[in-house]
Image (cartoon, rainbow, N blue to C red; front, side, top):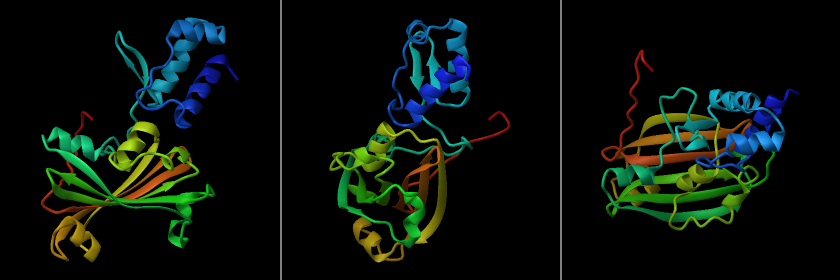
Length: 231
């Protein structure tokens, strides 16, 4: 293996493995040259390959950082609801509802990919004291062992995952649904009220990370994607 490929492979493994989280700063080029005993050209070639793969970003006069991962389509990102609520000038609160370690049932077996148990985390997102969304989440403990000991009483699991676990691929399904009994009770709306349902699965390489179902009252949330011939 060429040296620049070895450097690229080393950092790709650390990023995809979670050792280097989104936003983490990579060593400067001089340090990498000393570490690998190579030229600046070799280091630049390795970093350029990581940049092309979307794993890192270079900031002028600041350095090289692990990139915040994006979907392949670049149309829908994975939002952090807490950040979105704050950007709207509202107070955000997360209310845990249910948390349990369990095995997967037949419909969830694909999420495990042989990794072991699932952590089920249900909770309520609240904006300015009013329910914004009820969330039902499953996390593969084999892929994200740190989630078991994480303090998710205040920080929503989605926010924690975005901060600690890089993902490389995501699938999102959006649909209109009527509020079921539990959803209606927690969202403080009538049973059968129109809601927006967002279902999402994420992967890190071939490893499945999480599956989540979020239900929003129809009047409380929308999704906007802007795109055109200029990208």
